[in-house]
Amino acid sequence: MKRITTLLLALGILAAAPAIAVAQLTEEMRRDGWVSIFDGRTLEGWRANEPGGTGNFAVENGILVGTGGRNHLYFMERLTNFELKIDVKINNDGNSGVYIKSQWQDNAWPTTGFELQVNGSHRDPQKTGSLYDIIHYLEAPHGDDEWFTYHIICNGNRLECRVNGRTLWVYVCPMERGGVPQGDNITPQNKRISQSGYIALQTHHQGSIVQFRNIFLRRLP
Image 1 (cartoon, rainbow, N blue to C red):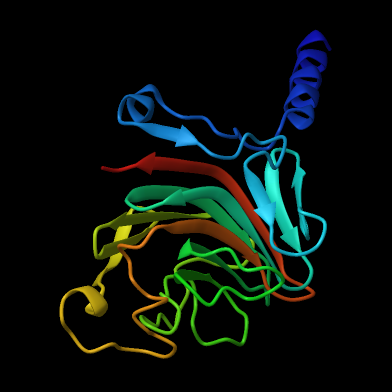
Image 2: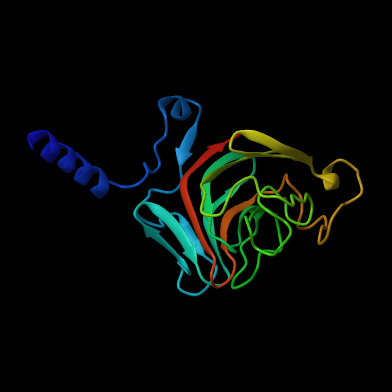
């Protein structure tokens, strides 16, 4: 009986504990210059571009959760060269995105910068791993309601995307190498990787539930 009681107590403690460890940087990551930009408790440092300042985003049990219609939550530091690591989970028929190099826009879809798509099963054919309107991935590298990790490296005119540790692509901005622009909505004004801009997280439509955790940034020279 004592053994069973001890086991039940241990299970109770585990059930009461958070499901994940939030913002746990390793010592090696700290030495390499990584910092957490989401504290797991508040939206400090972030601002939504819809009225109210937090929009459809809230912190729940250490996780940043986005629901409902269009909204974009900006990390309010202009960045040029950096690495971003972020854990993401999206529900069935959900749609979201991780934006980089975006400029601030009130009450609008971002029209500047680049969007890395978050989409497992939404009807939009551009799934997770897509660089929206530029590089198209037609099959998501994860399932619905399944955590995956984006690792985005932005340096000079070069953008690299990794999912769960695997490099999917390296994109060199044609605007900055003398090439011909590719894809829709690409102009010199809104698609230069070397420009500074904001990271932004998206809620897309009613019914989408997107979750973010362990949001780590490393600023590069």
